[in-house]
Image (cartoon, rainbow over all chains, first blue to last red; front, side, top):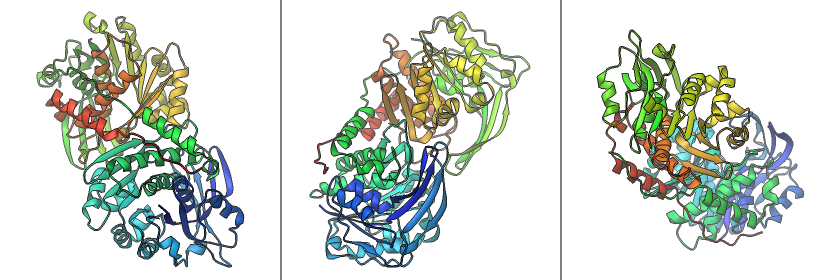
Length: 314
Length: 314
């Protein structure tokens, strides 16, 4: 069933130890949409400026993404981010962020975008996320991502927005920051306790280590897919979210149970692992369904063990 | 089959946000021995000073550990470490390290200790590890842990020592430091390529995130057991190693294959999760075999997913 995503549509300038790009297509909504497009129809909501053209829209269109809610702001500049990564890609410094057309963005969704069954609020200002959530009256299931900036300067608004979704997808460090709990499992349980209404599933992203799922009933942990060559981690989290939410959208006839969420995370993990193999959207643009399926199957083999009884002393 | 371990036997002073201990039993060899003692007979090799008494030896003896190679150095002081952990336990500062009796330590192993089938060289100066490796002519399988300090100041000696063991157990950041590779999978493959002789299995410890196994043929990744209350991470890595190596020792009739190494890691992970629930050795001292088995079974449930075919677009 269709997915609507709101979030940044951007140009990124990225430098890693393995190369650089001066201006490439990026943004949370773009990475999310490309990943989710493997599962279902995706409708992207967000503003772009005069510097954003058919070439960029075609990247999304080629994956069947509906771009009719991409709003062109005449005279405006597309959101721009530039950053540089450290030697092992575990640290990054933002060099510049230019909000551009996002500064004045007031989402006005088309009827189609409002009626999607599944909604993803990618990382943007929490009040924009909430405005979109309120317009999407047709959404039966919604998830949200955010970042440390909004916890710092807009925490109340963010908490209010979190209460309006079914699933929170956040870095583990940000979960700790959001709740003041020193442990991400405890932090996730804290967020679960805020409801209802509020999320019934928390997905803690752990960067290169993988992700964990915390629900009222259960816990699941999935390592990242092992790669010897990571070129650019930009967009990995949004690609992961696109895989997770896309998978769930494709199965939205059923309410997502623990087993389905686990499988969704496997698809998100596989997709994210492709994303980081090249710069920006380069790898995912030419990805195939067969490649994704093969990597999910491989991930299952790489994480499987079966206990066999051992006699323990004492 | 019996395991010999050489490494620090220590007193630790630890402060975490959840409490502190001024002088508690610690040291890599101690944590390792307590964990491995659930699987097989363990012989501890290392020096202690006048401040180390029957009370401490009894902690090991109660778990059936053979302490006849614990060498009392008259007039000496036991190795002492003190450290303080940050709010979420992910950072720690060493306040003081007093080598004490380790400064002059020259290992002289008893015949029994030399004839163990399995050997673990816990983190100490690489030349001491090598001296022990050379004495243990009976060891059919040996593993080694080390730390950033020795990579900084004794890298050549460490590399030489690594070549004498079958399995290297090291933090992922240290694997990257050791090899200069920015990615731990690539770093592990680099170490595998140094042989033969040399390790055929690399276990990358990832702290609160778990551990990964890299062999010539395969890869396995296992998340940490989720805990809401972690009190003191000191000794977690050595307890993990004790579980891994202990499990393998108990099955030393067979050469450890990939499946066995995976299971061994599950036991190591379960044991480490108990270790961090309380200070120092407090929790593992009163641990039971049933508790370990239950946690391994739980870990299997928490990490399991099974793919189910999904139709992918494109």
